[in-house]
Length: 226
Image (cartoon, rainbow, N blue to C red):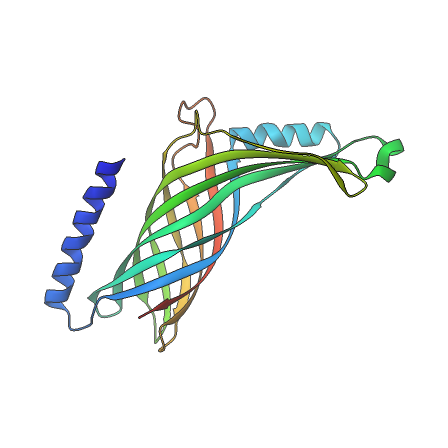
């Protein structure tokens, strides 16, 4: 894992050096932050969907809300074209929400929430094509390293929590996740940037491939390049 990140750092360093030598436009450093709406797709979710159907709606699937934050480097390659590597902390995972499927207990509003809380370091390497003054589209690979993976279970009734436990689930989960990412954005002349994107996981979250389940993340970001 460390060797992969080191190799990428060397390649990006060479790209920065060449870009500085060939382009009059300077390399720009920026910051970026925003919200994540994350879920899983694949066999695990298909099994969960079957369970939802069996429980007549007493179990539902939701996206896990999270955020991302970090830094980016904009490297001009040609007029209207940039390469933008980044390094960001990013929250991913998924959530299942259930309630007691019995009418006589409806007044209790009793339910349980199970949340997978996965924390990653993302290294996207984006190709950006600018159309007009600031509008741009972007796409590229993303390499992510799993920092931690936890499961949180919360249960309660009448607005009170009867259970709130969390435990580590790193074992069996893949440390390196590879995704394709892309989206659209607009960069203002001041350097302020707005963007929306989507991460499409290409490797299973399960290291042993016992189930083919993949990360999916919708992202909305704000940023500023100096």
